[in-house]
Length: 353
Ligand SMILES: Cc1ncc(C[n+]2csc(CCOP(=O)(O)OP(=O)(O)O)c2C)c(N)n1
Ligand SMILES: [Mg+2]
Image (cartoon, rainbow, N blue to C red):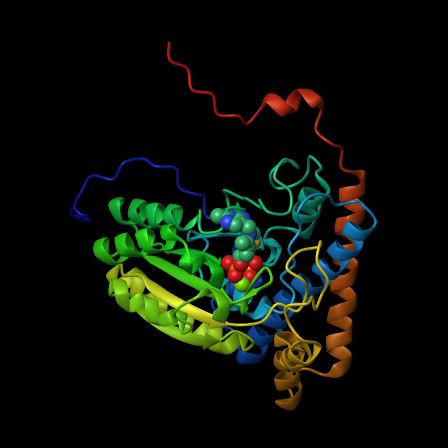
């Protein structure tokens, strides 16, 4: 099957270019230290937001499943800061950080977590289903691997319409043993689709270590099966993530070809709010080792050592972020729930007559 740029472009829904999140704004033009501040801000916002999310969950303001991203912020920030406003993102249930990094407001994310009508999905999606059409943020998906074929489909649509956008598909390392992963990557390789598959290898799928689940532990090598460019990246270093993303995105725009990035990271919290931080499947010593490579601390320390920011300026940024997060909580508290009748809205009904 061929996909040529000469085809007439069908009118598929394309997101209206949205305001670019601060960290994506013309990094070449920005000074290195201004960019570093934006990266720090983006990661710290995710961290503080999720710390409060955990608190709100504990007191019953948030219900249902809830998976925190703490420890992995350099990946969302690093990748998304390289995207254009008209690119697309699709992800898993561990989606709060990516939604914030893409520029979704803390108010919209917190209200969604609270199940209120000012949430990005009017409170109907909750933690696992952040969505924003304007931002090209195509969800938060709860079925492991279920969104990977959708990413290939979006990549196909971009190419069919002759665009030069990219779709980034975030997934955990446990998704790569799922059939959908292989089918989607085969199509992406075969049809040369502008997809960036980002595997956030945090070493565990719930309580199962990668070594117990995967015949191949160097996941990036799996790209070879489908002739896809591949790389392995330190996920605690936001600049390493940015560099790998820049290469992959440039390739996708220029040549319309996919890339698979295995980004090695670690989950600092439990799998979800229902399991303990360290659990019985990993040792405290292991957790402590990884905590030493906190992506935010590493980035901040590098900035301080290079004289790009002072400790006082970091504290001031932190205070500002904490206020923004508190504001999102206050806002979500007063946002109403949808009326009961709204239960029957947003439902796809296919009629035969
Ligand atoms: C098809 C399917 N099987 C099982 C589950 C239950 N489940 C939810 S999360 C998860 C682990 C996924 O781990 P990984 O892909 O590494 O992502 P992480 O949670 O580490 O971010 C499992 C097995 C599911 N949601 N979907
Ligand atoms: Mg995992």
